[in-house]
Length: 148
Image (tube, rainbow, N blue to C red):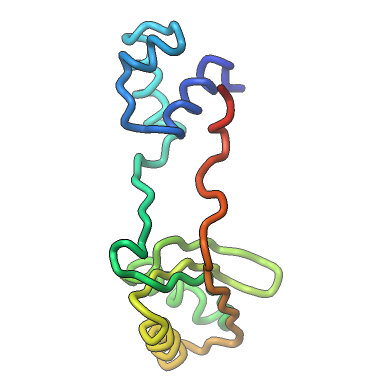
């Protein structure tokens, strides 16, 4: 089980991973050296990666979609490998309940999304697909942030 001090530290990192250890130390009362050791330990065991969340529309990517895909058993692994390295795939998870994968794709426009889906259907035996366009983010990456 993780300690309350560790949860507080992780919560602060989730809010702003660029905050300095000195600043976090002042907020938590935990010495900088202890925070440094905690950070190194968590980077080995708990933290998958430090990242930046972007507003893709401000970069010219005006279309985002969550796409659910099902293929036959023989093609599942090949499809997964293909999706993992495709440049439009931002997030990808393996799921159940009738589908194999759910991906979040980021596209300049809807035509690029349509071309991507056509390419998938030409390359793999897609049995079923569902597309959900993302209108806006209501809440994103905020689990454990309100710990303070």
